[in-house]
Structure formats: C-alpha cells, structure tokens
Length: 571
Image 1 (cartoon, rainbow, N blue to C red):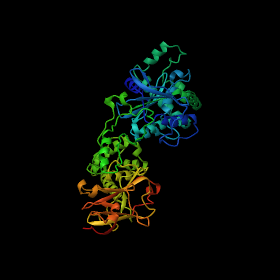
Image 2: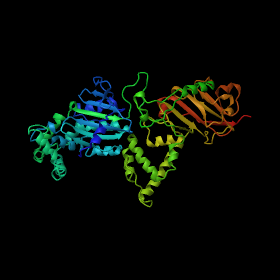
Image 3: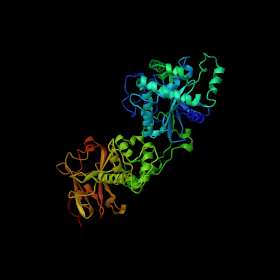
Image 4: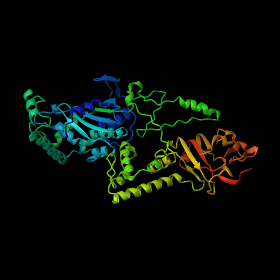
C-alpha cells in the first residue's frame, strides 16, 4: 500500500462522529474480537451497547478539535468527532504496532500485515472490502505503516457507516483465519516488489534508511526501515504471522476513529429518536382537528415548530444541515421527463449515497447496462443493445409503477394510498411516491382510496351512495378511523362545513349493529343526517384513514365494504 501524504494525515486527524455511535461499535467491533469463533450475522443496525462501557466527557484538543472518547469492555478505544465540511464519514482503524515493535531478524511484519489485512476475511470473502466500498460509494481502502502504528482508512457516505463498522470488525476478528501458506507466499512477492520499486531501484531510495541507521544503534527499533529486509520476509513463516497477530492485533491495542457530520450521542430524556434511512428526510406533522374552529389553533401550533440541528450552538452555522421545502411534484412523474443518460447517471449517484436501497438482484441487472453505484455513467452508442435495453427498461418500469399504484381490491374497489408496509419493496416505494410524497408507515396510518362504486363506475355527486360496515366489521384500529372526501371542491361548496366522518362522531348504527354511511350531495332525511357525508356536485373520491391499524388490516385480511349506488341524487 502506498504511503499517504502529510495533508491526508492532517485531514484524518480531524477525527470523527456518527449516528451509529456506541450501539454499532459494541456489537460490530467488540463482539467479534472478544469471541473470534463466532460469526457476525449481519451488517444491519447492531444492538445497544453494554452498560459496562466507559465514557469520557467531551474534550478539546489541539486546534480546537472537539472529540468524544469511549473505552469498550474489550479494551477497544473509540474516538468520535463532528465534521460537517463534507457529507461523508471517515473511518480509521489504527493498530498500535509498527516496525518499532519488531525484532532483528523478524522485520517487515507490521508492513506485511497492512497488505494482508485488505485481502480477505471469513465473511467478506476475497476482495470483499474493496467490493463493499465500491458498492456503497466509498473512497476505497487505503492504509499506511510507520514505526509506531498501522492505519487502515476508509471514507464512506454517512448512511453506509454501519456497514463499514461491521466490515472493520469482520477484518479485525476474522481475517487471520484466511491467511494460508499460499496467500503468505504471494504477498511476500508483492512486498518485495514494492521494496524494489520504492527503495532499491529508486534514486536516493535508501537515504532515510542510511540516516536512521546512523542515528540509532543496531539494536534500536528505529534502526531498520519500516518495510523490513528481503531476507527477513523470506524467512517468515505462517506461524510467525499468526503469533504477530495474536500479540498486537487485539482490541486493547487498537483505536477506532470516526469523523463525520452525524449527530453526537445521547438525546434529551423528553425527546424521541427517529433514525432516517437516507441523508435527507421530509418531516410531516399531523394534528387532529375535531371541527372547523380547531383549524386556526392547529395552524398556530404548526407555525411555532422549528427544525434545528441537535448540536445547537456547538455547530458552525456554515455547516448546519440545510432545510429544504418538500417537493411538490411526485418523483416518479419527474423522472419520466429525464433522458436515459441523465436518469442512469443520477441513479448511480443516488444508489451510492443510499446503499440501503441496493439489492443484489438490482445491482446485477444494472451491471448489464454498465451502471455501477458511485461511478459516472458513460452512455453507450444510441444504437447499441445496452442503450436500447435501458430505454425499454425505463418504459417498462414506469408502466409497472403506474399499474401498482392503480391496483384495487378486486371486490370492493378500494386500494391503498400512500401507506408503506414496514419493509417496502422498491416497487411499493415507487408506487407510493407516484400517488404522493411523504408516505407514512402503514402501521402508523393506513390510507385507502375509493374512486368507483361497486359496479366500477366513477363516483359522482349526481348519485347517492352508501357504505355499510357490518356489525363487528368496522375499521379495525387501535386509535381511530376517518372517512373523508378526496380532491374535494372549495370549502364553500361543502354543506354544513362537514368533510369527514369518523368513529369520534356521534354516528347512528342500525338496529342490527350495522353502520350505514351515506355519501350524497343533498341532505338525507333527518333520521340519517348523523351518518351523512356531503359530496360535491361533480366527481370525487373517498379516503379512509386508519390510525393505528390492527394486524388484519395491514395484512389485507380486512378491507372496506364497497360503495353501493342507491339511486339518483335527491332534488
């Protein structure tokens, strides 16, 4: 591996921070090293830290670089630092071992480990670290060896940090089991070639070796060069390498440093932590209004809300996260106007920024048309098979999204609107985005829309409809439900200022327990007025919202009854 520049070193010294914090480190780093016979199962969000981890207060060191340090139960030192200068996170794993820990006749081991560390590990596989870094949009692995330390460096997008911490844990705990005699023999030749290129065949390549040899006696650990001697490398055995690992590559001789723009550590006891899957979020606030008079109160409350960085005054305003207005146009419709070249280029950029959106099947398919996350897309010739396949794929994809968004329940005419399941597929996310951005999780609010009656005809104010929930078949919720008009006309056209019915209203069930709701433009008789939802004179749609839906509503086992036409509108 090449030596890094002084400028690069000073950049790393700005150290670290991250939202993964100690919870990621305790499982992903501590556990593999403590129990090296156990295999890490996932790069997903790790568990909470143990209570025995020690934490030191925030400190100011050097040129006003604030850091927070931890010592995990296995002895691993962890350093965090907030740096908002770039939307990426730097990760450095530093082993406190260099050529000065070697002995005469066994030199070059520290530098040899810098090479071996990148090759393989039990769970990443051969070349797995570089493949992972490329897939998540990282800068690629690098490292350096000095007389007193060996550093392993990565820079990754913020939302890929937990994956990279897992990778560092996997290397530290499991890579030694993949080092065999053939692997060692091959890497010896690589290091020998590096020595010939950087020292033996380079003008003045031995200058520092001569100077250090003259400054320090033969038995001093600074006497020999960091890269070691060719004779010592030839004599190294597999057991020598394993002994070096067991002695120096231990948690209590290693420091993990993380620097990035993410939020620091604990939260206020009265606050709730919500983790975002991407580096941008759209915050939607919903307030319950029981009547028209509540609207002004709700607007006043919303006007008092502010979004501020969690670090407050400790963050430079220049690096504060921007607050953007939410998009007003559905992303699916917006991309339909893009050329294939621009679309595929943006796709490669976004996949690198949001690796949680990646799937192996999707990456393999994109590779066939030369799209790789994090790499500029170079469009092929317009008459090439790859370009024609891209055009067909975009058209087919948009068609599938629109079809999924328009899918209805075969018997009732209702379909889900906006809501996403707990683990949505890419198609489910795209179809929700087509219908409207800002979709809540379905287990929070389940939206369902009906635009046709039981015979498949569009809903119209020129007709009268009923929606009858049988006894025991009302919307299953833990909170409440609401039936409202969608795309309704101006406020003045809605009779009685009523635009929704809910279980919080004084609804009037039938004698047998059925709940019969009427949807029509003109008022019904007085004995049905409590269950009346006024409709506009033209076309409309109904939206049923289930707040805190129960499991059988989420699974699709329950669905709303169809809207049945009962004749022309009353005059």
